[in-house]
Length: 385
Ligand code: ZN
Image (tube, rainbow, N blue to C red; front, side, top):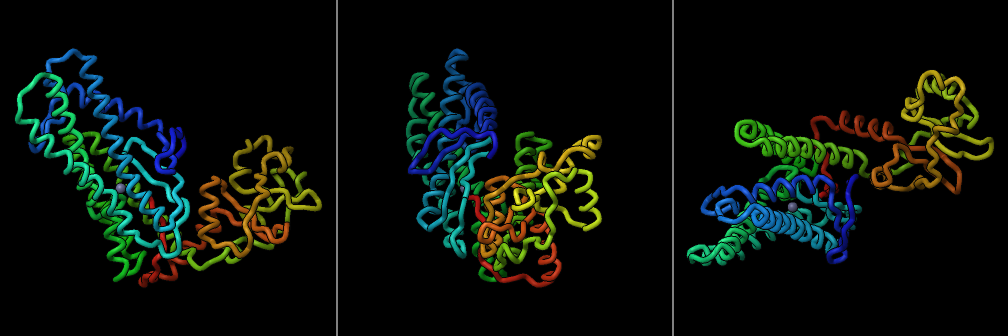
């Protein structure tokens, strides 16, 4: 995630903090420190204690840190199980809406996806359930402010872990429960259809949450927007992966485009794009292909500069490419992890073609249009527990 700071490793997994975490930590420290709400018998704030405000703020900050430590433990449960099953985890990021484990590589057939999704909420429920009796025993004793502060801390951590576990078991994307549901439905109806069901439940839930949020809690409304968008992204991502399954770089690449010269002007290349109806061309220095020029590159050049500027100034030079035999899904992962919009396809040092985002979008569109009404049986996919 952009805007994240790496703070260390836990069990070999790199941990990143996103800058939005600071905002939510301050908000939580304030809410925990200065309010005194209670839900289902759990005390959720220190506001009732007769302490000066710096003490309340300090207690609030401690509770906020413990809360996000709980989120981290939840994510670690996902990641450590995933690593055991052969997934490559590039890290865990904590951000405004919680935590996310980034999967860099999914092994063939995504083994144990359902269990991997389940261990996170299970861990949260266990933490909440283990702390609960300590809270219940201490709650009935009367003591000084320090003891009461401890009781409220136990209450907050127990409640939020139980909440985190229960909330994430909701069977809808992007919650963990959505992944558990998909894994169980995929056997019967296929991976893509199962993803659609779980994503649609997520969207309906988000709409309901947003409506409730408008009246009761603006934060809930924000969470609803996040859930709606994330459910759609999950579905889109799965559609792309299903469409690309079984295809190689050579199957989806654009080939046969004659190279333009590095000295050609931007204006002349735009004219060539229009007349040949292509969105990208290789750029040659006369002997070798040295880069790519795409519609998005030329669109960034102001109109008045196009007549004189050579394409060599604005082309994307991406000498490192993929082989024609590389799996199309791996090409996609490589493009998104290195944040490039196009990828040359190299064979023995020669560019034999290139793959643009537009190429991938076209393949996905064709696959979706030709499979309308029938749902391909496939069991591979992406996973962000
Ligand atoms: Zn989770």
